[in-house]
Image 1 (cartoon, protein in one colour):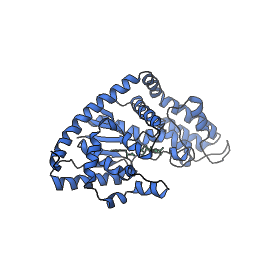
Image 2 (tube, helix red, strand yellow; image 1 turned 135 degrees about the vertical axis):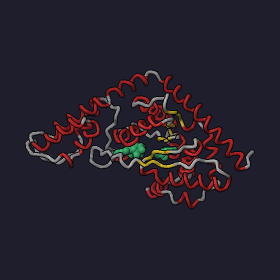
Image 3 (cartoon, rainbow, N blue to C red; image 1 turned 45 degrees about the vertical axis):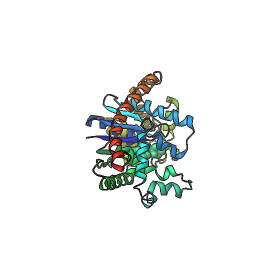
Image 4 (cartoon, rainbow, N blue to C red; image 1 turned 90 degrees about the vertical axis):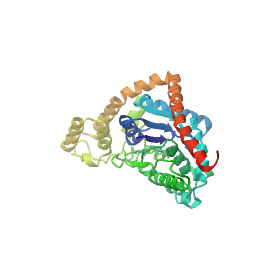
Length: 320
Ligand code: ADP
Ligand code: TRP
């Protein structure tokens, strides 16, 4: 049973990324050999600065390791360390109709926003299919926004197998519906593009300031408050123990407990929750050789699997 997922290196992780993606991905380590990669080829579709791409890739590796990725359990690697996926992408391109790609929501959304698409963005789902199929993955946990890409992957796998013989495992998407959408400081979905994030690894003062800016209604200190409609409580809930949460809810209902108090409690629980990860991150930043070694080892293991599949694929399509 192979579980595989990929993450784009898109900048400082925030607590929405942590609870929505990193934590669930790390929980997969318990289920057998998991493959997790940093999708740097995919990141190229939005033309990042070369130095920014390089830095974000290593930062993401550091952050995953700091948050508990165990390299003995998870094959952790950089997508571009397995260039075989680009070869498979080329081969799959030839069984992919343009119409199928033109129907991809994420592509259409970007174009609708005025983004001038390059061919890499258009072909993004084919590269993603290659990522999944080259490692003969069974289960692919992804966010809701990736559901259609998973369907395209299955479609291509079936089409390839029907044309050339049974080469690919048909993967199943695992859409984590239970993962709640983490609200940002303004109450919308937390997202870098909305400027409403709480980063997990910022300086103490900066995080405190961000939390003090979380939007609430304007009830006064004495007023009883509704815990169920408050952003501060929604965020607190992610990190507090059930007892701490109950205590806060009771204080809300009783009154004489201001939003400033609640925000202070939120800051404290967040600071404590990420303390061990912060410590580990500092250690890793001082030992980047270790981080590079983890990625190298993961890449070697991933290439082994990719080579096996590619030998079958090349033969099947007549390249050997
Ligand atoms: P951003 O919206 O900040 O650019 P990304 O799109 O890079 O974040 O998201 C990376 C991963 O984190 C995705 O798997 C996504 O589903 C998850 N994620 C991002 N924001 C949230 C959120 N507010 N709540 C839950 N999960 C989130
Ligand atoms: N497209 C995914 C995202 O933006 C990242 C990704 C690339 C991926 N290749 C993958 C996820 C293969 C799962 C499997 O979130």
